[in-house]
Length: 178
Ligand code: SAM
Image (tube, rainbow, N blue to C red; front, side):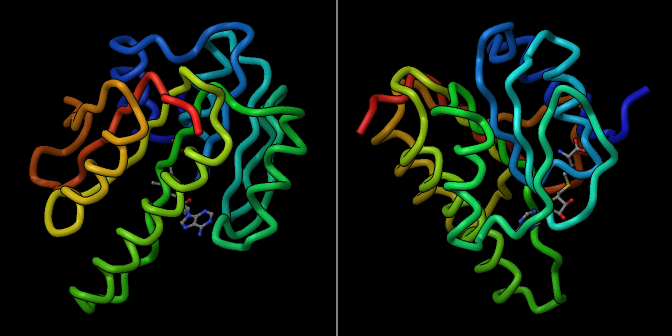
């Protein structure tokens, strides 16, 4: 079985966009407990590295780093472990909310933006980016940033995502390169 319900969301996304195949290098940001990485491994991905604040049970052949992605040393460490630039950057990261609407919102947008900046910095040309985002203020700017850097950008609500949640997924393919 899968370690998370989130596994069904990435399954739907991958059925449509075919990101996971043997030979591609993948980074999974906020991987705990590991559902997305499980799906990628099941679909033949061998070169995959994930990071989370929380510990994750081993998922060979995936490499797992326990670290804060916003630590400036994290990005270079991920690329070092991966042994080269990724074809796919995934982010299901969500910060812990504190219940203060505006602060929570800023933190969510900040984390997604950090994931986008990382993807733009490290992806191979033609590469893909998937991130959990939330409907509402700030997501237009994030989509615009993606559209400047990727040929195709979609805003998707998977069937496996609770319809009453504001969660959406950005799927950007065809990275234009730096
Ligand atoms: N995709 C995962 C799966 O399928 O099992 C579920 C991910 S869960 C929804 C979000 C994760 O993001 C949490 O485990 C959380 O610890 C992690 N996270 C939040 N902020 C983070 C950060 N700054 N650095 C690394 N991980 C972070």
